[in-house]
Image (cartoon, rainbow, N blue to C red; front, side, top):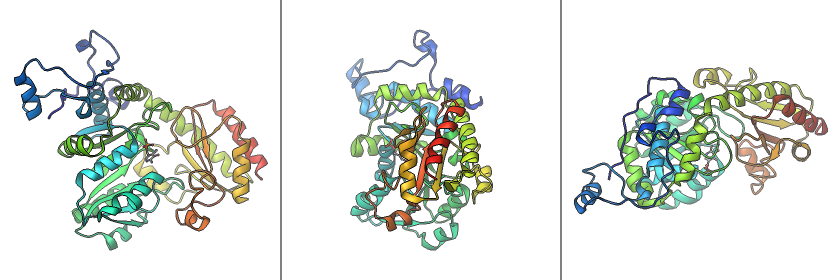
Length: 403
Ligand SMILES: *Cc1c(COP(=O)(O)O)cnc(C)c1O
């Protein structure tokens, strides 16, 4: 089976031009500026011969929406273009992207090496899910590339990481890690959710696949759950027509594809605002007496500030900080914000604050939390798009109470 790929018309243009125009030609849709939302599960064939050709992959076209939908295709063309990949596949969630990709390629006996700091459900998939099927998972500190040299072997299928890694914003050098992986025949998957292709393009630095939770910045409005994989065309076809079609069934809804297409139109201006506000907030809270340490790649005090400047176009909208007075101060801060919302997730217009020790990582014993770099007084902020002075006032007054 094959999906219609129209030629990209705008690829040499700037980021926002491509985010807005790639993949949709209004003249093929009655002049409609927005791509239609194709709310259908199946597609009618002109003749049996046509149906046969479509199933044999001899004629491009749609057959059933689990294996492709025209609204989804528009989104995929945009994502491939923006990340600089050959092809993209949009799926039901970020977890759908990670699991569909990995299930498509691993065999019993394979090994996956991952950074020790991962999004919680990715960590759970590795430790409690795929490892049941004789896939060995090794967690190391990928900020130290020599650790990878020590454990990588001919059995290593994938090296997987996020950068910056949640929640303490450690950075991993994409080109150095990719070079080591490739020397050993392994391929590299980067979860680029925190940065989006506007701030960081891992494929251009040697990574083989990028995965995204479209739920976050890319759709940008906190109204959907969706995900994506970007990589070489042949591999994306395998994930599409085997991984998603037969194994996970993690299909994106056409309406969620449409909302992501809509969100992408403002990605650049939203990210610029997220980055600007986050930088100012990071600078201010770094000097607040309630705060022990701020983790933000844009600060000169960040141990990998130099790498951040080389690898990222700007420093992103996520800040983590540690409070002097630990767990209790974390709770006081959280309970006293008035504008910021106490919520997990990230990348929305609303500023979201979360306290891992009492929320996402509450079930871990404190020693286990520390192993993952989560101290008791660590708070994470997804800086939103509100008026900066309002946000600053809110954060300062809540910090004043946490001294
Ligand atoms: C949210 C998130 C995911 C999971 O995405 P869902 O869309 O919630 O399935 C994976 N990785 C990172 C870094 C995330 O923030």
